[in-house]
Length: 142
Image (cartoon, rainbow, N blue to C red; front, side, top):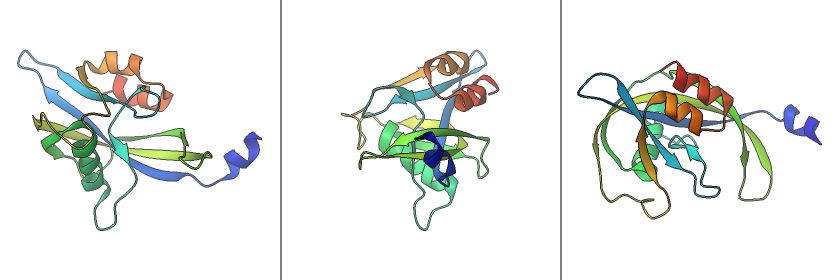
C-alpha cells in the first residue's frame, strides 16, 4: 500500500514563511490553521501559471493569511515533504518550496478569513506547533 505512494512523483507546492521584525529584536512568524484539520501550517498552495514560485507563495499568503504587503525573497529558503490528502480522496506526495516574506501589513479582512485562524509566534514555538519534520527544521533554523 505504501510502495505506490512512494513511487509516485512528488507534486510541488509553494509556501510563504511570513515573518515580522520585533521592535526589541528577534522575529515572529505567522502560522495559519488548515481548513480541513485545523493543524498549524504556513500559507501554501499550488504554483500559479504566469507567476514565479515567490509570487504564487505571496498570493497564497494574501488569500489564506491576509498578508497585504510584504517583501518576498525570489529563491526558496528551504523545502519540506509531506503527504497531501486530496479532495478526490487520494493522497499525493508533495515537495513544498518555502519562500521568506517580510510582512509589512496584514489586512483585517481577506478571502479565507472565516475559514482559518492566524497567529504570530516565535520561530521555536512555530516549530513545536507544526507537524511536518522538514518544516520544523526550517523554522528552528530561521
